[in-house]
Image 1 (cartoon, rainbow, N blue to C red):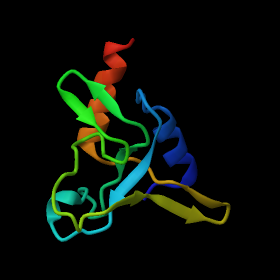
Image 2 (image 1 turned 60 degrees about the horizontal axis):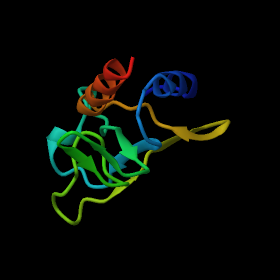
Image 3 (image 1 turned 180 degrees about the vertical axis):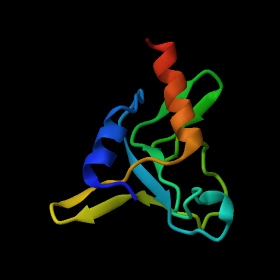
Length: 108
């Protein structure tokens, strides 16, 4: 698990065209939603609507997919806590990061 400094530096480098926060699903019944280390995946959760080409995401969705699956899969802000207080968790979803990187390359 990333510490505050590592998480902040990593997340600050993510280029996303809209406001976002770290997010996760509140139900983890399937293994596909876990990182290699076994920790729940942390996604880029959009705080604004986003549309680019064929991809459209509503505010609250993850950048990796719309999240239109089971209605009992809720999304929430993913924060960690240390002696200094709460901070956004480091994004670990490979697909979210790839999509953010694609946006950065196209706007460079």
